[in-house]
Length: 504
Image 1: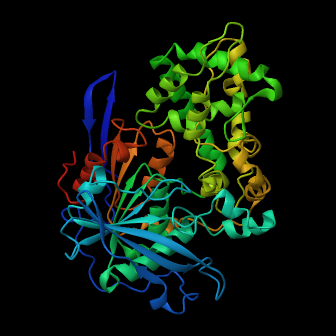
Image 2 (image 1 turned 30 degrees about the vertical axis):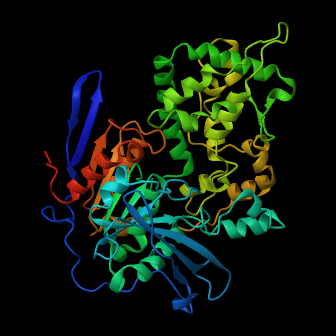
Image 3 (image 1 turned 60 degrees about the vertical axis):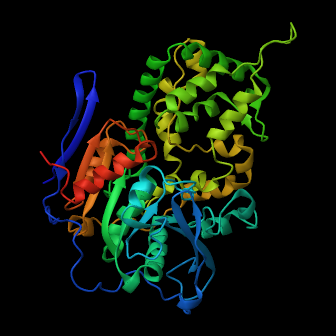
């Protein structure tokens, strides 16, 4: 049985409603953050590939930004933890505390960023959820393997592989299972006496946290999830995920054009212009091409986050250059083309494009699932047909399509590897349903009712599999709630775990 923290605001509800959801299986409702009794049992994560543990951790000196003290940690870990020998990679983590608390005994909190393929935030001051967390925690900001300063896999570094097969062999080690093994390795070097820590997982970071609950729960004191409940069922394939996500994407498009109806004509005019251009599109500043279907991918950044609708609208305000010289004709502005590329970060974070569909794969290939499901909705998502009929052109959401590797210049060299990854069948399991059903770790999760990236229905199905979870269901925030109102979101989840937020 689950209890829900529901917070909904809609035209039919005059004010937000809040209901707490508490799982009944295993959490001590009065004090769920109590220390776990007894000494931790050894982790199930294999560390056979690590010989000289003292030589694999380097800690820097403290430095500061306003109201925060920071220290850098660099670790050497195996690329493949299951191998008795082989290549190593670097993993970077930044330790953050409030100024003056550098030597205090504080509980540890590991932050896992969204993605896949994006590094942890770079703090410039104490603000948002980080400021709130540093009131009681020593925060560890992890650059997940392949990102930031953790042996970053960039377009240029990936060019060192001579064949696509070699690249795929390497990339298969950069999913949530190995991110969790890295986290366990780091915990044993940072947390005194191999103590437990709390994990805060945003979006894909939450997916990783549920993998953590599945395979190394002994390292966890508690878990906080924000928009990060992954689909875990055996029958929950990539196809199931994208079918559900396309429904929410349609809803977000309808909301966008209701908010900015004047943009329907602007986008139709733009699509018609792109369709008539030589080659079916116009050159992008970085060397790629902007086509009608490529334009639709802007929905990935614009439709699902707080302020995204407004940013998208203001970008379309400046889509055309003024005609300074009569007779030169209509042209797309450099401003718009540059803004488009700035929103679509595939060139600087290629891991996202390469591995996104694989985060839903367990023992089966994705086979370009998003493209397949999109083709089933072509009557809705055909941009040229919609523009010719003067219908609103719908944008797509968090989906990677094979033709992206033709249209985004920086990704062209990764095209063959992307196709091999889409056909890869032997992906390892990412979740243990039995472990989740018998979970003993206190878990609190923010579930966003209109989340475009993590489907609400699938998230609730997963919640039912995690014993003791407490849920806060809300449409007060979008998927970016932790970024937009981090202090409030973090405080709500901590209050639920500590019994300070009422359940009714």
